[in-house]
Length: 106
Picture 1: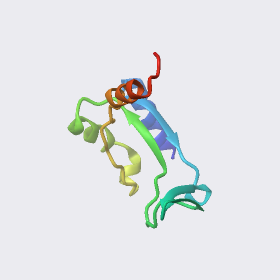
Picture 2: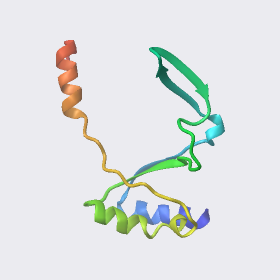
Picture 3: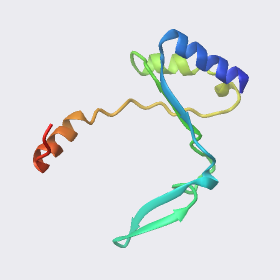
Picture 4: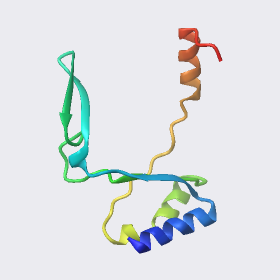
């Protein structure tokens, strides 16, 4: 983990780090879903899977290739950790339209 934290510091120093959060183990998860029109609340992870989401790392990258280049150097990749890279979803327009429909004053 020291190597991972060291690389995280490199990301911060280079300006690529925009945030990150670790998650507690899936045993501490609570999942919400609707089944047959009723809210179902269960203990445990959101899906039956052999893999777990351990946290989220938010990067500043120029594009997908740049993000791949940055994360391919993370020591955890060499340790077998899988990183899923996704672009940020910009919901500003959707939120603005929803606020307009609901009459929310700005």
